[in-house]
Image (cartoon, rainbow, N blue to C red; front, side, top):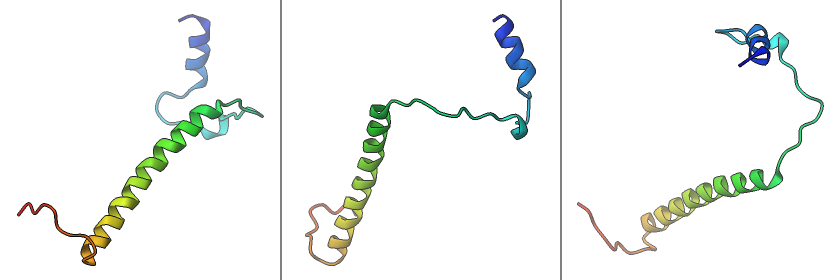
Length: 71
């Protein structure tokens, strides 16, 4: 791995992190398309959850018929 890995091993603790040495770059370049896709993925799961809760509430209120009874 060479010198870069040796420098990394010297700078990073083996077991517990040292927050005093943490460095944050002044700016970061991100790919907005990746974040947009991740947001849409997460929002779709939340939308499915909300729709299922809505269907459950409508069924409990008697607004939806029972189509299949398992037991």
